Length: 165
Image (cartoon, rainbow, N blue to C red; front, side, top):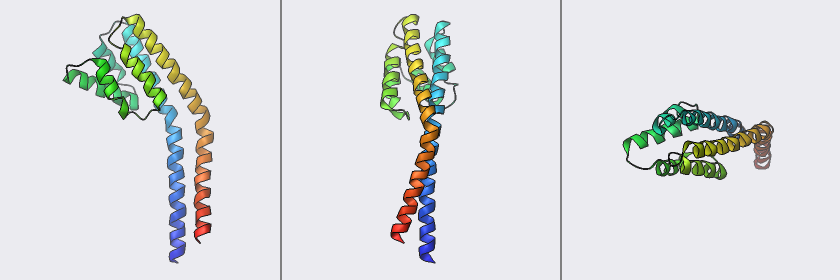
């Protein structure tokens, strides 16, 4: 009876692990979409010559991790007397993004608030187009990979159960 309970718990644990990995893959396109939305809000405000703190505050209303990040940047910018690019780069490590995505945001942070509006708009456009490409790639891969990971981890759990039985 104890072996049966242990086997059931082992199988349940691996299935839950598979569901977690699957959910993470499915959540990624939404996170990237939140960045695209935030960057578009920021771009429209800069094009309208809105001051940078107000533009960042407006963009922080985007859903997801982008909004949380930008709100944190705005709060720190209001509280401390430092350059925007310093605060921007300092808080990048908190984001659940891949290194190339963080590098693109780091390059954007170096442009924001330092150069004329045209240069900032070009940097925002490059960043937004890269995030749109990553979102398309992630959407294409997420459905198939999520199901595959779920099945593979479930199969690994079943195999482990058979070996330990």
